Amino acid sequence: MTQAAHAYRYLRSSVLDDLHGRLGLETSGGATPFGEVAHPRFFEGILTAPSAAAAGLLAVADVAAARYYQPRLPASPDPVVTANGDRLRFESFSGCGGVYARLDVLESGLDGGGIGHGTTNVDVNVPLRDALGRLGPAEPLRLAVGTEALEVTTPDGPLVEKKVPLSDRWLRGFAETQVVAASFDLRAELPAAEAVRFLRSLTAGGAGGARGTAGATQWVVPTGRLPRPTSRPVPGAVCMPGPQRLVALQRVLRHARALRIYGPPLTAGDTRPTSSAWEVELPGMRLTLTLSPDPARGFSGEGGVLDALASAGSEQDADLVAVLLAREPRIDVAELAEQAGLSSQRVRAALTWLGTSGQVGYDTAEAAFFHRQLPYDAGRAESRNPRLRAARTLVAAGAVRPERDGGAMVHVEDHVQRVRRAADGSLGCTCLWWAKYRGGRGPCKHVLAVGLAAESAASNDVKERAAR
Image (cartoon, rainbow, N blue to C red):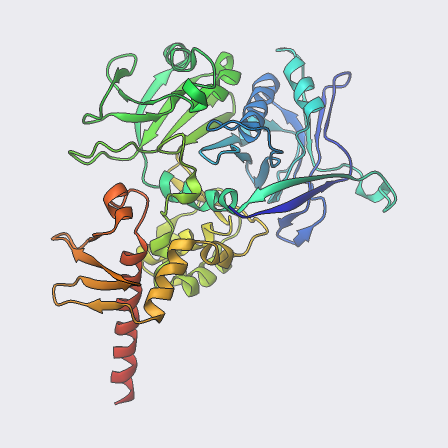
């Protein structure tokens, strides 16, 4: 897995002034409506539930610093903060890439100042974590996201720089989680007392799990006051892939007002583990943890973006849709489709494409996409995706031989893989990847190649008819 050293540069370290109840979160370079800004300022005002907010921020930082699979001690990226005009969103991934955390501080959780627009990283250092952990339940807390006095900071002033290894899988995780979460439905909702009891029962015994694998996959069935555990998927069940990976929620249990559990619809007879999202409602806030289907699997390899990346025209559609986005906290797909003159399906594919550069996330609580702006190129995800690169190489080499039934023979070096079309129009393959995952981690390179070849042939037919 390739990695690059990524530098976060802050004017000073983030601090919590215990004497005056003031939390100052320093920002690194970020994107705003005015372009790239070295140290953007997004908010200054009061946190209406300071103790809950401190616990939520610590939970996001806990996930960023953790590896739930094969634990190590790497430097962790600082959380990403997005200001959407009516809320602040703090996001992080675990070091193993299998847990995504987001704290949404809503408008009702903030008071006293306007909320800006933009995305950056915020410094959450060890002394700050210790100070947040000491915050008393009745202590007021004033929040400033970004420096207060840029005008008095000279180029010779203090500069804090962190260099951390930032792998491509961490970047791709932002794209994959919004695709995964967009398929979720609300499966269960528990009031405060039941939510606390249930979550404590899940995370009892520590965070490590057996052999550092964060626990085995389990399932729960939402019945009665508490979800009922089960060893296998049944209708209505929600997957708990490594329940010990929910340990960060322990931070906020004393502030919990409700627990909501989200997951995808289960297909009859399909026993494969799935992702799920676990949202704790807090005063004026929501903390959500999204788990990959297995502790050993990071979101970066799920393959949910491959169809959109391989689809002809999706890049051009993404360019158009990107112009229409305005850092909204909720993106209305139907309205966006009308503005762009595209179908809703094409808009969703364009949003997936934009997600590969971190421009789009998905909020399960509101069942809506939201806009953020990370400083990464959309093309980076495609160029670093080995399956898509291999598929394009196969098409360029003329390795795809279509068959009358809609399938194809794909010649790969000294052997042949057969891609078959099922009655519902979906494609399957005879390769080992397909045999292992059955499409559960996106299409294999052979299925992608067949799709690319078909689109290329259709495009050539249109050009030939137009030339006659």
